[in-house]
Amino acid sequence: MRLVEGLIETAYASVYDPSRWKDLLSQFIAVTGSDMGALHAPPLGAYTPFLFITENIDPTPVLDKVHIYGRQAPFAERAIAMGLVPGVFANADVYPYEELHETDYYREYMHPMDVEHGLQSIYRLNADDGTPAVVMTVNRGRRGDPFNDDDKAVARAAFPHVRRAVGLMLDLQPTKMIDPAIEGALDGFDTACCLIGAGSRLLFANAAARALFGAGVGLSAREDRLNARDPTTDSELHAAIARATDTQVAWSQRAPSEVVIRSAAGGAPVVAIVVPLGHENAFLNVGPIRAAVYLVDASVRQLGLGELTRLRSVYGLTDAEAAITSRLIEGQSVKQIADTRGTSEQTVRTQIKLILEKTQSTRQVDLLRLQRLFAARPDGLSAEQRSATRRSPPRLKS
Image 1 (cartoon, helix red, strand yellow):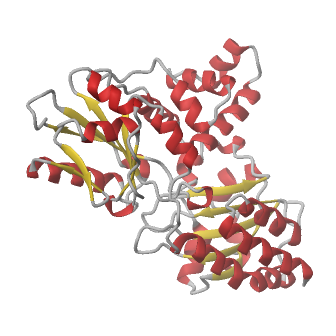
Image 2: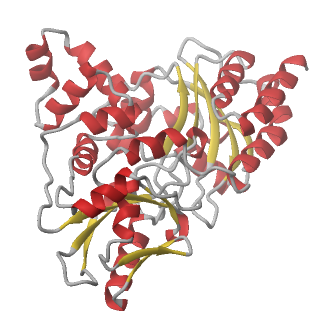
Image 3: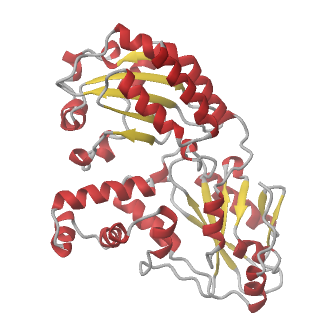
């Protein structure tokens, strides 16, 4: 009982300190005698799957299968059909071992990672506002025993409290929607950038963007929205933002789009590049951000692969990880990278795994997309606009 009380205490502490969700996962693994686990959002319906936090999970043996099987949730889908969720169940309750072992999902995905037995707590399903499902999954390998009634009893005792903590985390309006470190990093960019949340809400505009709003470019920020002066352009802009923030469509399928915004004063137009920003991950304090809008002077717009400095800074990549990212973007294979760096292919795969985790990416093309965005520079800002940027106008209210 004391162990369950510890889980409950950590769950409520996590509402105020998102770093404690990892502690909760670690405790849950220990209490249930598991080998590994994840706090994650399974791909239910058309929603994009993503991981919040993992422990002792090594996807390296199945990196070439993640794009196929990482978007499947056979246990959760069966549990939903059986009316077991929200709630607690063992994988074997919904998928008998004899049947499971005959599937490609088990042979090509679970077995290589030594995932044999699973205990899942599904706290919530997809919400109408795009909030993802939330599931705690713990696993044992082939040498472990199946999860029994005592293990389920522990999970069920903690279930209502963890579920309430998850609700507090995702449903209450946060007092601060964006980490100040992210704001600071973006304020240091020459590129004018805006962060967009659900419902096309403007969450933040960096210093360069705030300077543009007052420079007669035909774009403004009012009532927590980006607004183009021209009605037709305004409709195009908000349609592009709606497409980028639609969580009913997989992130990899939400391609960036561009809208040309004519200057109100007859100057050079601005290109608004609207880009989806990966997995909505409220547990790591970046959940409200759904898309970014980069505002680039059409006469000097540059997109290239020459710089990884901004990508490295924002995502905390080491120099070695940034170098490997650059080679991945260039299309080099794991073997080519290992030969060039004088290291083993296994070491490179491990570093790639860390790079994908840090950038919340699943494929090489995702890294390419991110790098292209951070390489965009509006070098054509006027002297007045640069001066306004240096004066750092007041931030928009979030």
